[in-house]
Length: 107
Length: 119
Image 1 (cartoon, helix red, strand yellow):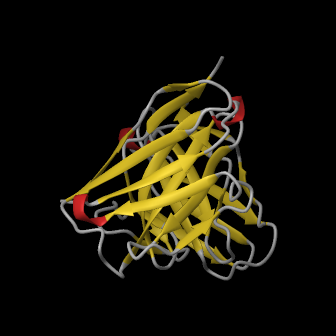
Image 2 (tube, rainbow over the protein chains, first blue to last red):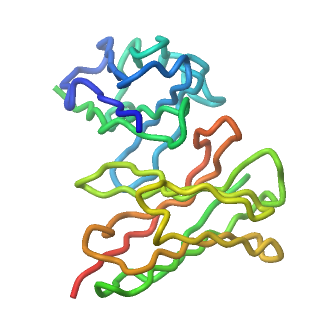
Image 3 (cartoon, rainbow over the protein chains, first blue to last red):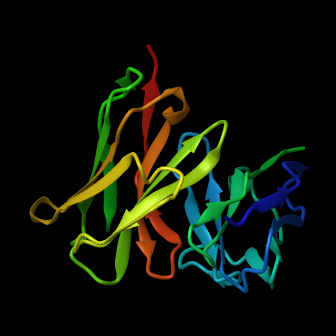
């Protein structure tokens, strides 16, 4: 199975900061990565798929990039609503696996 | 608006069988546009894909759980279900149902149901 490793595990940032989260796959997965946001007590929410395509309704301050083994999720200007945990997921190879998560907390 | 809602027992004893049902509203599960999936989340293992199914009954399971998992569909009631046999404390988790696009990522999730396995 493909391992997805996110860094950092925790990130402290302030409102207005540019935030970047990294996800590395244990083997090449082309562009088949999705990103999710999860708030406490809630289900994950799809943000980005196919590495860089923004899901409908997701604010444009979110963006994704990468291919092969290295991927990033960027929040261009962190907003109060963005403090949450973020997960990447690969869907290149059966079976589908998730990263361990990156918690974005208030600095 | 499409909505998914899980229902099932909250507390199980080791060796018992876990059964969770997902009710879908706002859309028919009889579609070739989506799979219907189960995912669980535990502190120890994070998010884990359990498997998915088409409404027609074809299923795909995580190899680590395949020997204990069964999915079923009740199209007349727009529901699908998960059964997990011989549970242990390691199966304690929040169980989510989700809509899985045929590309194999998850665009809609239920709120999740916490299942605790304890003697």
